[in-house]
Image (cartoon, rainbow, N blue to C red; front, side):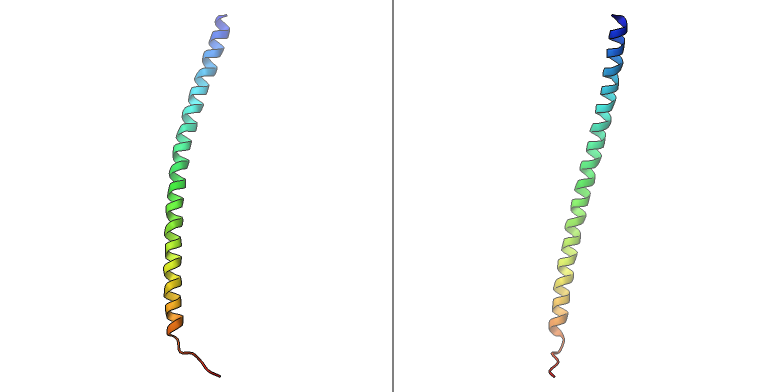
Length: 66
């Protein structure tokens, strides 16, 4: 009986350690997802601004007539 309790105690301790590791990993992954989302939004804004500037430059070019 003592052996069974000891084994159960060890398994519970391992589960607690694993649960803590998974929680820490989850926090890190959520932070990484948030960072990547912000970076993506910033890059989309940069692309939109570059598109507007390019369109402005293209519209300022003289039209060639053949």
